[in-house]
Length: 232
Image 1 (cartoon, rainbow, N blue to C red):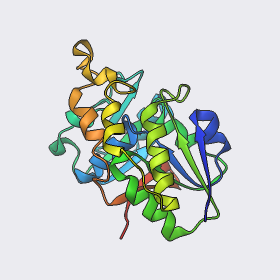
Image 2 (image 1 turned 180 degrees about the vertical axis):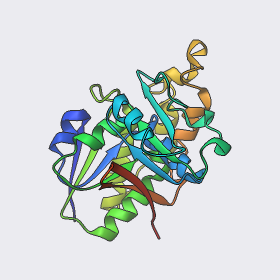
Image 3 (image 1 turned 90 degrees about the vertical axis):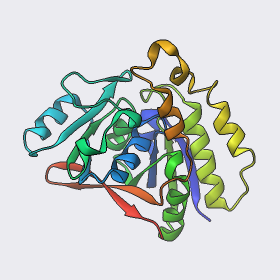
């Protein structure tokens, strides 16, 4: 049995210990799964916009993807929307990614022994990876909205992963995912905000257990690297 802790927001990331899962369902770590499904070469998460531009100057043919307050960062190639990114624009290229919540969790999880990311689209793979690793301590960090306000979708994802780790049934998952339309995902159905929060993003980010891999965070001389690792 693992010692499983559910933590919250940037402060929770700072407190996380052991094998740490940084959860951001809408949309950072759902997007990164879709990016690897589009055959990107590599993803490099960074904390700041300035770091993103600096890294682009060092990595030829890289792509800047990111948001602040949901909106695409000025000068970036794409925002944080999986439904708007075209495979032809990203396949085979290095992605530099910064967001208000998800990537902030990575850079703040300074006490973690290992970091992977989590979302509904790969929740079962996340649980399978943890079970295979058999860590003593697991921290599930719900990054919420901009890392400062709780978000129902991240809490749901953490609860679901915990149930998988504990071998428990998780009743009404379909209903609870559907409930996010009116409790956590309302902005995806606002006709006036479709340019920033397309409705298609909601459905892409809630297609649970779509991908059989986790995204593992490592570090090299240029910073963090988010690598895909298939869970058998």
